[in-house]
Image (cartoon, rainbow, N blue to C red; front, side, top):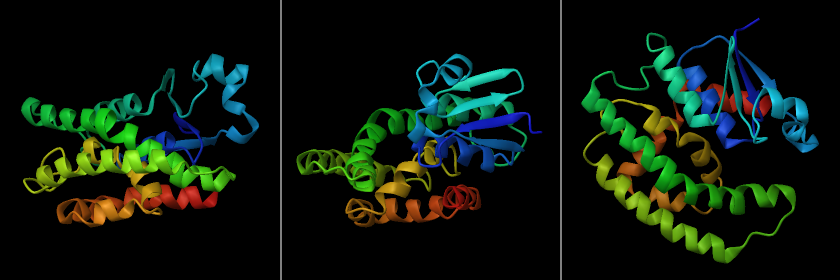
Length: 216
């Protein structure tokens, strides 16, 4: 039995973020499906043993239990630095650039992208009506973020420098959902952003995540 367990849902962007990291690091692990439709993540057992906020994913490495997807990915990158893809730099200055990229994703990109994923990707799946005003507002906000990305990616191949890091990986789940919507045009219209997306979404580790998602 694998010491590492990832508890979550393959529909959850946060779960997909952790799974992408686990595959990039080539870690032996067990994926434990959490039935969110049945409210399993809100039940006492899950709250008391995995995440008191009732959210996925939850992560176990032996006796260590973590939640919050970006905290989990950082732990995996540091703890298993010598395995798989080097997802964070050891050099302090290069690491600082990567950390800035990670903060930009979390603070600038994701709040906007997640609203668009919900309105355009999730609501139609569950029979809810998309709020066009929210979509229009957040498309404009995302365009401004992607303008910054276009400028950055004109200078380096990846957001955290010249190699793939967590700064790039953290975008993969929302990109997956947004590329099935009208928002794809915002990425396609920016050549450096478009090339970056094509690169990171074709990574073997991410293709394994998508394969797992399709099996659930």
